[in-house]
Length: 282
Image (cartoon, rainbow, N blue to C red):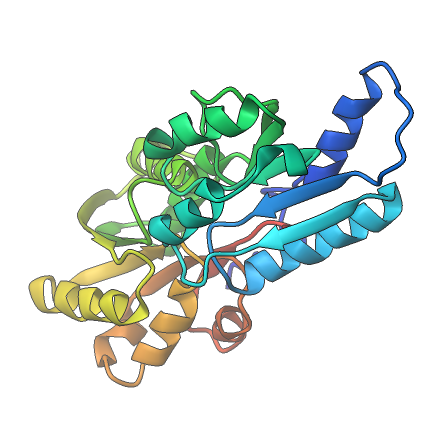
């Protein structure tokens, strides 16, 4: 069985604080009696973001800066993230790193912060914002890899449902585009002339709500009893699908392609329930 548990080659992300540090080295040095402070604002809580926090804290110790990580209390909560950003005093921070949940809506606020301090985006970009840059992986490439895995799992084709936490975050939109633009193309490992017919029957957008995600999975099986594959594009989806296995007999007959390396997802791979997962080093 195909397995990306070890040695995920899709991505190796840079540590955000290093970006601030590198930028500062290019500026004229000025005496300072205070230690630099940087802030990271995630798009929610969870194991992935806890790993991001651990990496940031390790880099902060190495570079002798203070780092604070603030997480919205709920996953994919634009309101929660906006509350954090809108109450910041930018001058309190040497730099601020943001993983924006809705680049279009948040660009104006990000630009306001960037007028008073250095700002980076990470994990998900806001390409029209006036930031120093973006630290992250190729989510388009991740979507393309998901298409390649579907080809391996279902060489003869079939119906596919795609799970997404939202349709506003840039990294998810890039994953979606990478998948859509490559699911019907010959990819590495395909045999010329043998590409099956693939149909994306639905996008299950749950807004980060586990119960809503489960409802959408139940509904797509009701609407498409011949569903052949689910591509689950967020970390929480693998565990949700594993919890639904006992409830939905047909789930065991469907190829599952997931993202990230939640323990339940990795156990699902070990048990043969998940075909593959795509993960990054946060």
